[in-house]
Amino acid sequence: MTNNSPWIHQLDHSRKRTPLPADLLTDVAVIGAGIAGVSTAFSLLKHTDRKVALIEGYKLAHGATGHNAGQMVTYFERPFVEIVNEFGLEMAAQGQKDVDGAWELAQEMYTEAGLDIPMMRFESYSGFSTLAQVLEHLEDDRLRRAGGIRTGTLEIWEEAPFLYEIPEKYRKLFVLVPREEIALKLETLDPQYVALLPEQRGVMNSALFCQEVVRFLSEKYPDRFALYEETPIGKVAVHAEKVLLDAGLHTIECGKVVLCTNGFENIEIFTSSGLEVNSRFHHSLHGVVGYMTGYLEPKAGVPAAIHYYPAVDPGLTDTPGAPYFYVTRRPYEYQEGGNHNLISIGGPDVGLESRAHYDRDRQFSEKAKKKIEDFVRQVYDKKENLEFLFTWHGVMGYTKNMLRMVGPDPSFGRLYYNLGCNGVGLLPSIFGGDKVARQIAGEEFAPSIFDIPKAPRTRAESLPAPALSSLLQ
Ligand SMILES: Cc1cc2nc3c(=O)[nH]c(=O)nc-3n(C[C@H](O)[C@H](O)[C@H](O)COP(=O)(O)OP(=O)(O)OC[C@H]3O[C@@H](n4cnc5c(N)ncnc54)[C@H](O)[C@@H]3O)c2cc1C
Image (cartoon, rainbow, N blue to C red; front, side):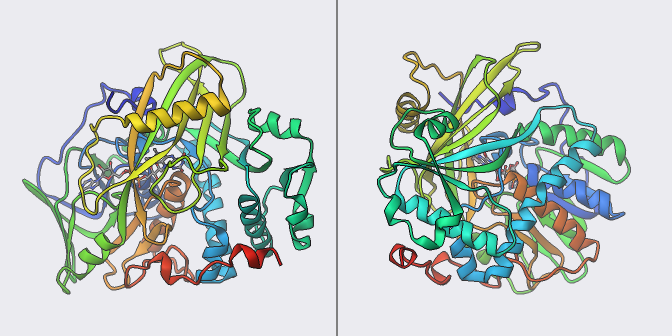
């Protein structure tokens, strides 16, 4: 069992790949052709008149973009209250609004590129099983509303054992519902799930999206855009008047460079201050491998993207934050004309050793498969003979404070970042691409939670989130 992703399966495998054939002079080089790089290129071509070269070390959209759950979501992988404590309510709320704005940007890309691939938006749910989970979401919800962000209303089982422990200040932030309502929306009879949060979610094959957007860019901007694949960049040298990229046999000279590399693979950055940016960059990011499985079923049931937060941690994850399983159901064409739903399930992940190299052909983890099987049988689908048609994994580059890095380097204005994908990165990548392009076009922005810090920011440096006991007062 290796790495067999349903998103890569749907790509055009006869598409011709072009490695960089000679030295190149361009205005902007974007390194990394996942959704971050493709969105950045799209926005640069739209908002500026610059020439853009998109440089990919391997193949278009074969990184995390080709190995994810494909859910379009805009939440942070960190309680909102922590972000408020670190940056203040106004900046945290603006960060959330920025990422929420990516729904429209994604739609804009879809429409302008004339795409006809499935991309859907609908209401779906997170299911909770403990008081602590419910309180965390109520506090986040309270702060989001205070920051002017629209959120869904939490629904709690009218006989949940902890009802009387919920502080009065949250009374207007939830409604009580019968158990059947929860079972119906979460599609499970597992009695541990006693509350749910509705949220706008969507689905797409982000690899196919990238392939089709690149096709459009190549046709619309033949003189200003080129994609070079199988062209790994080993070194980036940022000089006062230009940037040089070492592409092995050839050199790329550009005015600006945008790193859309997911933050992990080997690349060294040299500046007039030596390797200071390089070590800051590498110390800011670490890798986590996420594991997923998928199976087909007859097309019945509307699209769904449901998250399940169990009461007891099943030893699922190395990343900070509450562990959860995520189930996605969507129409999926396995063979031309075939008409199925794909059910995909994720949750287990494993941290990578610092700077260890991720092997995209590594075997699928048997442990992860077993955890997913147990979950599916207990919670989602009682099927006896569960056969996974797809098992796949991908690497997520996590920043220390779990927020994406978007914008120029604080010391070197020719160097930009749109990376640190984290596990929720599709819409944030699209937001990041738009922002970086506008910055390169000269637009000024207020300070943001996504700005690149001068020194690696750690999560511990942020003020501690209020303890559960203080939420109960
Ligand atoms: C299992 C899993 C599930 C996920 N589920 C979701 C989800 O449901 N919703 C969601 O929003 N997000 C999800 N994500 C995260 C999401 O997939 C990523 O945030 C997103 O794809 C990041 O895109 P990217 O372009 O930054 O990175 P990538 O897609 O990894 O692209 C980076 C590219 O840079 C190239 N590159 C790196 N270094 C170099 C170099 N030196 N020279 C040239 N090229 C280089 C790589 O080859 C790669 O193609 C998930 C991720 C995983 C792994």
